[in-house]
Length: 322
Image 1 (tube, rainbow, N blue to C red):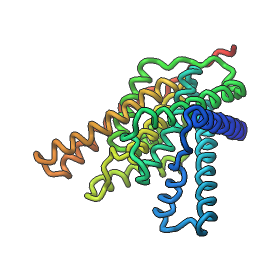
Image 2: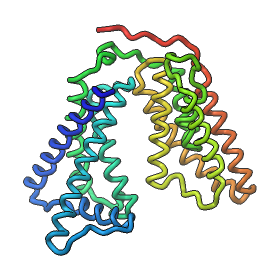
Image 3: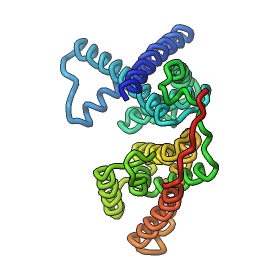
Image 4: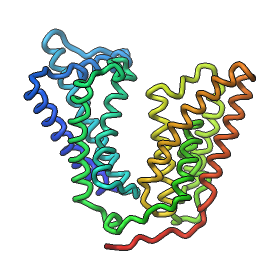
């Protein structure tokens, strides 16, 4: 685990340097000014915490600039650690796709925070704004992927086992279920995990208790009128992350490459989130909201069971060393 973490820090550090260099090169070529988004994000985050950046005049501006830069560094390091952890967990993307995923993840974290804090709406950006955002993050992703492939763990030296089609389909189903009830991404695999210690995908009793509690809590909270729209940026991002965790967990249980199950689960999570919201809106004028929510509960739980129960006692496939 330490090796995975340190490798992720190294990958994130190199990626951040490359991203900053690409951004500076873009500024030099186009003569554009530095973005004010990092500083405004700091202001918005401070306001959300009912705080203010201390100081006056130039002192305060310097602090805002430094905090904005530190936020970017933290994002880059965290994204690198996440990419390293996914690879150690068996998610092995081809190099070009891995670079896209790493860069896209970092960009999504940044832009998601910007949107959630109300700093800017990325949907209103023009071509130049998107290019200034996408290209440096692609460079970041390429640097991260290079480090990950250059420093493999012992387990990664074996050729990855392709996932069976049935497993990918089950990951898709779990993603749809997670789009309806986000806790199922963790709770589904945890509650159906093998009980034998040391078995692939085994979960401890405390983990099962936490999974059950989180699922029960969401089933109750979903019925509350104040529950936010599941397709809001923050809520949707959380559901997609939960779906990715679920797909990766199913793949880890069978010790196969988790890249395709992860993608399938995320796609299912998006479909389940949008579909569930449309169902509730359609049902709003046709039945009591509680009845619609309970029907959605039943569908989500049924899909999760169909996704997680098969294969739980199947012997794992064995990777072939190269």
